[in-house]
View 1 (cartoon, rainbow, N blue to C red):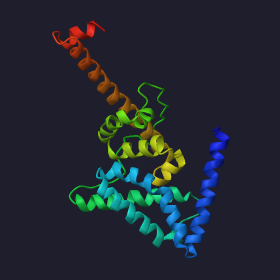
View 2: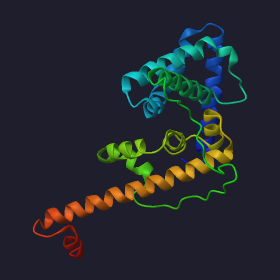
View 3: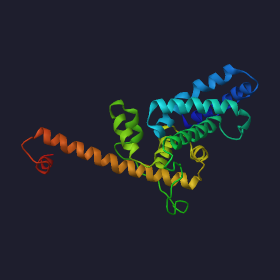
View 4: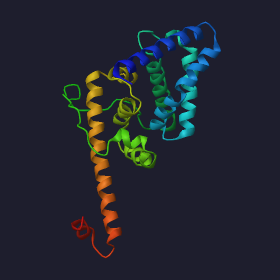
Length: 225
């Protein structure tokens, strides 16, 4: 699908969402059920990256849809409905985390020194590519564990931007951040993932060499590469 075709499909989906929202506001429960079917998996994936527990994530998504249904009149139609849903899901996740860990402040905001003044650059292509890793079943667990090592704010920006495909503007709106902050966090998340994954695969290669040459020390096996 070309870039223009993809953009057209996204715009058509957004318009279709609005039709369903209007019908839901008019009392059509089946219209809202269609919205639930459309976004429940996406919201569950996002919630799991915060809750790290599928049962809690499922509760969060149910609460988010209920809150969205009860407050449909508060949805501003100058933004995408999906972005509004994501924002509600993130807020519900944070509320649940605060209840579970009352002694610890849970927030999406982080103290990034001079974040607003940063001038982030794109991280070049590198192997392994994190998006490709996530789609590869055999390596999905590796990326999941590596993502958990990131701070909450960086992890969510990466999930929304690189895994869920949200635009910079949508991500900024969902996380209530500036575009500059989203760009900076996206840069840091990709850079940290690159460093962590590179170290992981380096260790894996060294173990493999030792297994091939069990009588050698890791450094000696490395010379045989």
